[in-house]
Amino acid sequence: SPNDRAGVAASSDGIVWVAPMQKLTNRAGIIAQIRRLDINGGGIYIQPSMQKAEETLNREASKVRHLILLADGSDSTMQDGALMIALRMFSNKITTSVVAIGDGSDVP
Image (cartoon, rainbow, N blue to C red; front, side, top):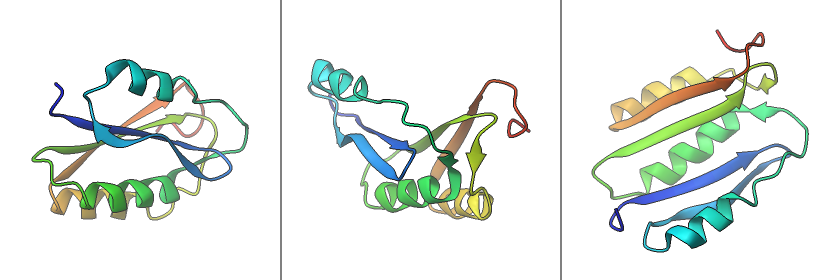
């Protein structure tokens, strides 16, 4: 709904917001921002991505806060500490879903 908020960040050679957190009032504009997402190589940096998401979501006043981590199932690096971040977010009422693309070694 227009009252909801969402954001999309990409992790490759760093973490970059392709669509910063915003109200969903301009659906076409947000879709255009997300379509700028490009594959640049490098790994999917799990821990830094989750850290950035936690910082951002902690500042959100929304009643429901949820992180969806979409990652390559065979190229997800820097995973150490990610579970602790997810648990810490959960204790702050921020839920997390993880979706792995493919069937690589990082899927389990």
